[in-house]
Length: 79
Image 1 (tube, helix red, strand yellow):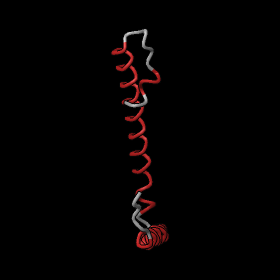
Image 2: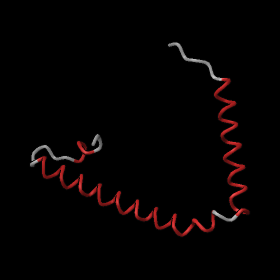
Image 3: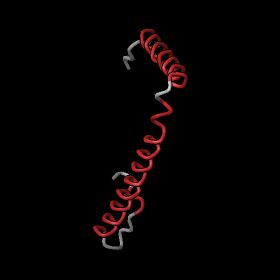
Image 4: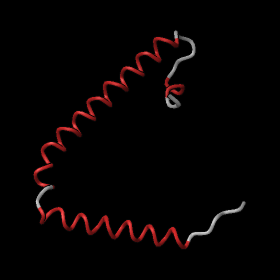
């Protein structure tokens, strides 16, 4: 909702403008989510293959370990 005010014309009825912007956002987001779901349903068999899954697990495992190590070296900011 914070993005809406910059697109609202104060000289015209605001409720209708908010309704149009809000419904447009809902439609676009719904279509995006449907697209992601369709893509995921097509990729699920590919990701279940061990030759694909193992490198992905290693990369994310290393990322989590690295993040954990970096967090242990951080100090608390006392501004």
